[in-house]
Length: 165
Image (cartoon, rainbow, N blue to C red; front, side, top):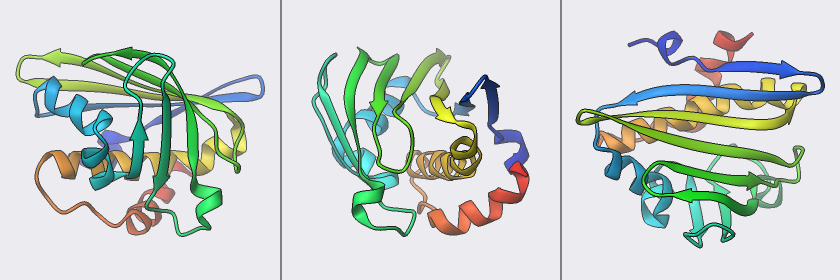
């Protein structure tokens, strides 16, 4: 599959944008859920994460990349939906963007999992900056699940940015 086969979309309604990615992952749903919700698993592809695994619980994330001051990268929020192993939805509060909501929705498809990722409530300018970065993080998730080295985020971002112009 090519990068274009995994391309996300940006939907704009008024002043708000939603990023959407759909990925078919050749792993059981429980394995994908663990990679999204267990701190040690998430650290391998995203960055240090603490999570109170329940609706109303807190999530705190410190992404490994992009190269920026830690305070700018830090993300916090409240878990809005916790429905293992199908839906994790949480607030995305980060100093560099508008408050928004991220949703990971998993569907079992035989021994594979279909992940539908959405990030809604971004401003249009921020959405255009986030889309190649989100694509890069999802590539890192797929590599982690496959037991392969995760690609360098900045290299993936730079390779993917032209796809979204």
